[in-house]
Image 1 (cartoon, rainbow, N blue to C red):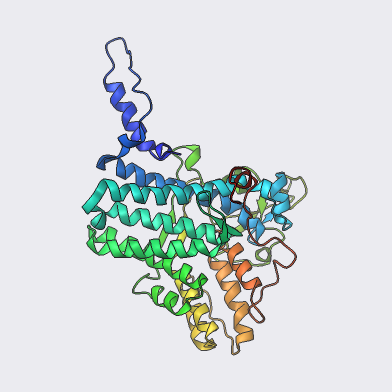
Image 2 (cartoon, rainbow, N blue to C red; image 1 turned 60 degrees about the vertical axis):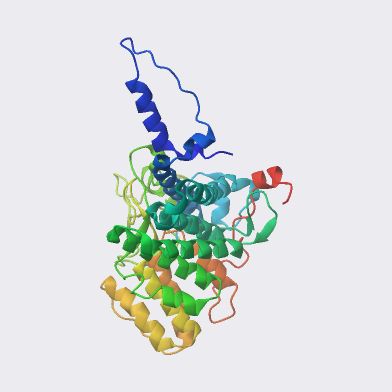
Length: 410
């Protein structure tokens, strides 16, 4: 496997160069495919890292719509067979090949790209913004995997615990933070520093390192107003946010039959009902399920948050609640609600506070691809933390059929 598929920008540059060499009758000499070693030069490192961002966004896009119905963010009202099963809690290995492949492509592209950066940049590696960006993309790719897969399989190896991805992400975010003090300009350095702290805070929490997670999530590291995004665009269909297509152009996924269908006016969970020209409630692609349209992502170029300062508030709230500090947890929850001009909530016991925290985190991260993991990890806890939604349902994405068929070690 080569890294050529990363270099969309480099390929365009090559094509433009070839076009400039055309003679008066527009004859063009095809230079042929690039050898892998031809990419080992500093000018190609920027498109290399841009390619990491693209592949991470594609992986997020592939999994987001599916994990939204594997959990309880959305409901399936469409015509797709595997998604009908996902919505009922059945996740088969033959139905996850695309998701498994896109998630591991994002991870492999970033991790192998980091090794290439070390070779090509040499002593520049430790002060390059490209190095920091690459490690951040690798960290988020591994976090995305850890939050979704049942088991880790790394580059043809055997089955390992899914937490291996969180450990890799922790190392990659830490490496970005090591590099960033040497990066200029300051605005770029500071933005990436916040992304790395936000990503590392979450994976340290998932590894049970809650005190360290809360320290990373402090406002000095991740300001409440900060967001780091998976980017989308209308430049090409490959750059589109497909969840928007499936909930606007097609009517595959609906807010109907979810908890949020009974919640109106929460700015974190915007949706509306759609009516036919005759005034009836529009039904979904299956011809029978009422279609309630999500309004959080409204364009094919709508970006999806990967980490944000308000998430850090509820992460710190969960750390406080795990330490039985109900007043501290509720203060942080209400600080987050205040960002959206929502009234304060009250709880006096741990048993009262846990359902509030779970609901508030669900609202804040609605349709950002994080809910399925939250349901999974809370399902494994004893009361009062335990969330029962995933009882008798599949709780993660299994090793894909294609991986099993091509990898003798699984």
